[in-house]
Length: 53
Image (cartoon, rainbow, N blue to C red; front, side, top):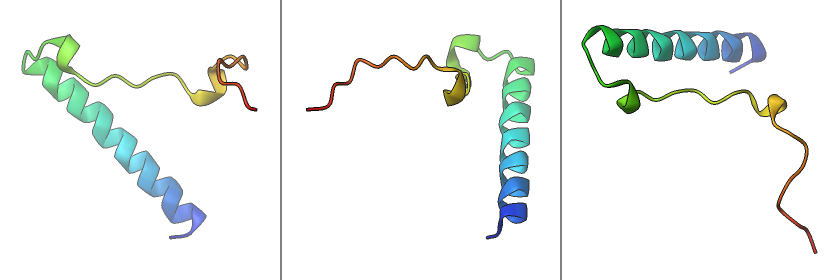
């Protein structure tokens, strides 16, 4: 898989993920049961509780 194919693969995967969430909401699924995406890892704070020896 090259970069262009990988990009298309990820775009398609996210599209299907979001469509599944919308479909579940329309069917009346409890929102607590629907998987939610977390913010991008790049938005996390740089402080970490992990210490290295």
